[in-house]
Image (cartoon, rainbow, N blue to C red; front, top):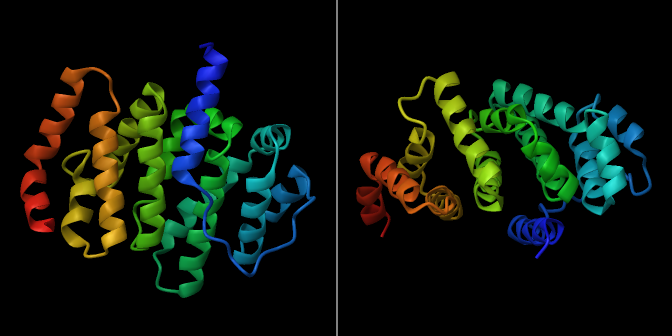
Length: 234
């Protein structure tokens, strides 16, 4: 199997894992919009614009996506997500903005040019992880799903996901890089969210092919009381 065929298969598996984000009935009609127009709309954050952009991203071809990325589309999305996360979610409007914004990031990552672009820049995955600093469970769920998908996609993706968790630990003054996962597991009674968190744990541990690395990662989680947590969840 050629390198190209291998990349195609990995991308197909990633796309199947992520799937489309939930549709939003209120969305801008961007069916035939070019990347330039979509970039301009990103300067005017709204649920309608983000929802329309998500749909356009999901239907775009590779050339369109490359142009969107080269014109800093992903940068603008991640910057907006960081601003929204910094506000908290006291207002429903901000919570909806966060959710529709992260759905656009998900749509970018659900394309082969998008995932390769993200893998080429450590800063993107770090920015994505900072969106975990929010009380919006739906946003955190999507971020964790994206990190899990990166872990499974390739060794490079696994490395970047772990680096992003290390970065989050430093920025948010947490004791361990997996503290954010274990804290969320301990605090949540939202079953779909707990399932996502456990899938992240599995993806982190099973991502590396090297058995010694897997054992080390599992030991980190065990040291953070993962086994006790699993007993409680049963």
